[in-house]
Length: 510
Image (tube, rainbow, N blue to C red; front, top):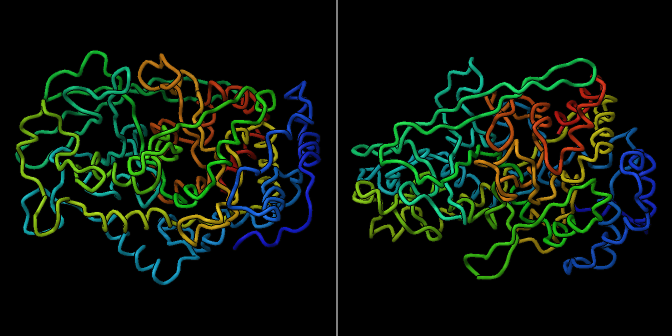
């Protein structure tokens, strides 16, 4: 489904003015001159669009001013790829509805590879060995539970799960790896080798009093690494916990035009309520060109293919064309690890995961469908949506885009999508910072898409939110917001209990 239903001309300045008046944002963000708001908007940089397209796209992506009804096609949050399936634990694992027959075949093969358990070398199961020698999981599915969020054992005392989908990244000032343990803590190892240690997470209660007398107790995590078998970490090594995120709509996020993402920064700071954000510019490892980082909690990966290749190497120790070392994250200081056999077999090529398998996994990861929204016309959901806008949550969680006309895959082209992200890095305050939180980079996180968030617990009842999984509820996730998001968070704290309930009902409808 494209956006052919949009016709006629559009006065963008008038839309902005109506939106501000309708929401009462001028009372919250005083001193904003409406004419200034329009200057950064427009789609002049999008070479994929004709002038007629630009008018249509501007109209359909303008912030709504009417919260009495759902917007046209709001149900279809993933565009034409949105699926209408029975809502159950498999709802995140469906192929995009607009995939052709050939695409569905490739998706199915990629699905099998995503769920495949890799084994240590040597093995009689050719092309399935090469795991590790040190690793975090035996399969992609082990961390991305049913293609959704992972689990953090110990946060809920009632949860007896042994699954570990929480990664611990290592980093020295300047970005280099730990000289002994590399870039990532890996507690598991193949037979004959010891893992790097054991992870322990301790939680401190942080009570927050809300308007109306309600108190919410947040859980502040403290990560400890114990029984470290290869010696001590470098004294300056910082730890960063990362929970496996959901896999939905990755190909559509990749198809958002770079100019639309960069334009999210250009809106005047006064209107953005003190929120700035920045793009993480990276060097494409293939072309050498400067490109926008889109994926990962720190926007550290350029596209789905490189994200997949990185996970194969770092999380499972499997070599591939983009990460050719068959020992994964084993450093030179871990001699026993680098002396173990690998899964590289001359008859199968020079990598444990050949390029064609990376392509299949990329195809799968790029085309996991978004489910249809639910209850979009419910009065409480519409009231919550209005509060989401009025609290200026949309300054970071940009509701909608129209993807590129020239996207690499046809099913991703010219789609109206509703991911609720600006794809930028934001300073989220010391409370959510990596390590000691002494630098802006340690406090920065990419705005996560919100689409599908309401079905998180349906897919994985033990799943939690935020980059390290500390938030047990959506309200807790909101209350952890700080830094650039402090003002929006404080508005939620000041809401009436019914308004907060409506806000959460809106999020649960996504």
